[in-house]
Image (cartoon, rainbow, N blue to C red; front, side, top):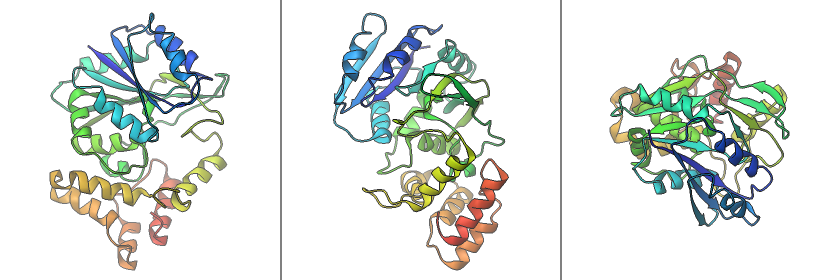
Length: 302
């Protein structure tokens, strides 16, 4: 199968050499690395160009639009000639069998079905020393995708059919590109979660989006999403992303799904907040997180 690995870069010279070395060591070789540089001011692109004799690489140097918009643009720029579209971060280390595991899964799938693959990862420090493994989701469901993301972008693979659906309607804003792909794929396709860790997910001070290491930092990050204002678009919450989803795909939803999405996106009246807080449809992977979500519903902070 022909694989595209999509990499959005931005001032990544510190770690990108290691990431590219990990691509050189992949057991499965039939892939093309497609790079969209998001306005780097360092030597990131030069480092990538040094690998042109070892990897099949295409590079686009473009203006800075931010990580989510950059990846979605790159998914479009990649074109429709690939069987699988995988996503990569510039500072991780891919296990040697990462591409192979993804390909083996898609080889057994019917290609006319939209499918998204994602996987577990090993969280490491800046020196690639292990910290912990990511949590395995207990239940993958489209209504969970409205309020929580279980798919880390650098583990995601889309087949051509899923790519087409994701690109069929472009949102103006999303919380993150990986969450958006999980949301769209959950409603219109199939999600496969690989419980084997497939990469070393580096945590360092320069991460655009990282994984919290302690429970305190984890909940601090989550609360920030609900209460801290973004300089460009204000406070952008899960209900705003759900509204974008409704605008993009509402006409394709069945009546029940549309009703549930509209419950999350409507005016925050007291009665609606009560309905949300007792709704059996919205849940997060951990019971304590589901309880916090219901409190946020009551407070109108969603």
